[in-house]
Image (cartoon, rainbow, N blue to C red):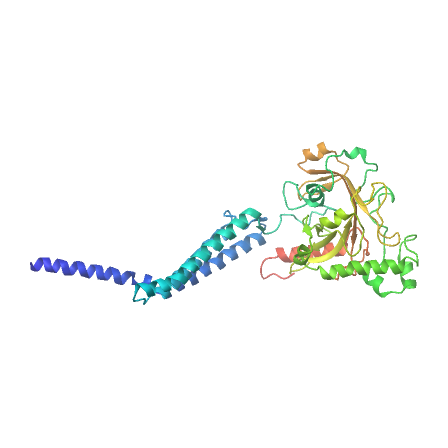
Amino acid sequence: MASIDRYAEAGAGARGDTRANLGWLTEAATWFAVAVAGMLVVFIGLGVDAWRHNNGAEEESLLSLGNPGHLVAGIGLAVTSAAVLAGFSIAALKGARTVEAAIRRAVPVTAAWVVLVTVAIASVTYIGATGVTVGHSSHDDTNVVADDHSGDDASGDAGVAAALQDEGIIDAKEDPSSVEGALTQGSNGEANGGEHDHGAQPTFTQMETMTDDELLPLFPAGTVTKADLPLMREQIKQARAVAEQLDTPEKAAAAGYVNTTSDVPFMGQHYLNFEYVRDGEFDPTKPEGLLFSKIDSGPEKLVGVWFLQIPGIGGVTREAEPVGFASNLDLWHAHTGLCLVGFSGASEGETEESCVAKGGRFTADLRWMMHVWVTPETSENPDGVFAYLNNDLFEKQQAAKKATDAPSGVTQ
């Protein structure tokens, strides 16, 4: 009997030790400590993701499990959420001496778990359904293309023309041989011998600060008269007012503008407002497009506005430039036989067959387009207020890229 009693006592002691060893699981502080560890894992994952994108990783889904940074951050977030609720549950239920008290305390705990699970499922479902992406494109701005209206899809199925085709605004299938005037890259070709713009001209700052008599000698010959200046000044100020109101991508999106290209050298990202495109009207207060670009260590800046008039809408034709700003200083440009091959560039005078052979997206005729440099970032663009390209912007784009690509701790 004595030996049996000793065995029983030993068994009871072992069970007590087990309970003591697992007792920490019933302490709220334990789970809150786990939550802190989970948050540490989240930040490690975000750091890994940031490092990848700063070292050439392309744009990807927010739920991309192939990105170790996303996976680690997701695990950390799940651990943190579960641990916080576990600690809350233990703290709420501990000390309940009756069934009724336990039920009362269990109600908010259960509600918290239900809310967490519901929000998590809804968020994951929304992200998956909308295809939210993060990161940046693989486009290298050192590969200079005069007017690469390409988007973020490596297959070339992107850009201004692609967006307009998808919206049913322009037809992608017309043979470019039926369009008169084979154009050089970005020029209007027909009326001005292939020129991109009229040459040296005043900047927005000069237009705003100089007198008529001081300005007139600065315009290319035959483009502006003294009678043109009052209305032209007013129209340019109206375009500037829009630029001041829509100076961030977020404000542009809220106003109905959608990005259609990468950060194109000399121009920036081409945002479009399809409502304004469809109305077929030239209105300086309603530019069809906005131009954003990465020009410093901060977020993208608004660097210009642009206008787009599509033949067949509002009386616009292929044969004549649309009515635009007062005077003959503004010059609309066009693209015919346009072929976009992802981020590798754009070419004109192509057939659909030659473009497809390159793996590109073909557009028979895209016109009429005009850039206007009226933002605070480009007010003093030396190329002029209606210049086709903006060399000063390109220098800023290159400087921003070099600063981004520089190793940590290295100054430019």
